Image (cartoon, rainbow, N blue to C red; front, side):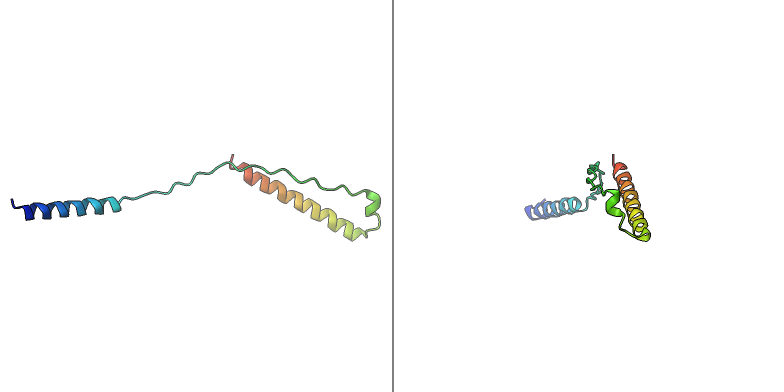
Length: 84
């Protein structure tokens, strides 16, 4: 076997090995880490006499808004707890 032929075979073999290395398949695996549940903020208390000047519809809208926000907080906390 001539040295040219051996060199050519070595070059072809190296090329095949390099191409095979590039053709490997990598798989991305996502890992879910537990998320911390943040502390709820301290909401200020509003005395009843400060709310007395509000019309009934404004008072009811404020109460509905607070209830909606609290429900949303509970929902988000439940989502975060699913990561634990």
